[in-house]
Image (cartoon, rainbow, N blue to C red):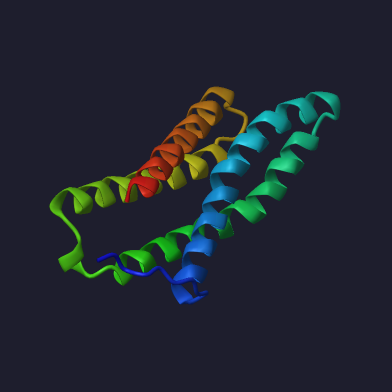
Length: 138
């Protein structure tokens, strides 16, 4: 016999919505800013840095919310309901989230070193995307 599915808005729903929204801002924002800032910077010299700084005021709180809601979600699942493979994937995802944050921090503080900025931004985005895929798998 199958279980009847119900619909309700509860604290778990709120946690997942906040997590997905925060991840969307962090990763989607990196993609959009990466595409827009160079164009804006060429059209209006100096404005690219201003736009990137404005994004960071939204991105870093979103990153923090994603981390907090991710940890909250981890704690909401009893260990008896997870496998070793699930736990390993979660650990890899957490490492990728950490590297994504470090990459963004290095990018933000790279100064005029374009190669360092680009490499750090690439690492941040790729690790964030990989963590996103793993999060969907979990």
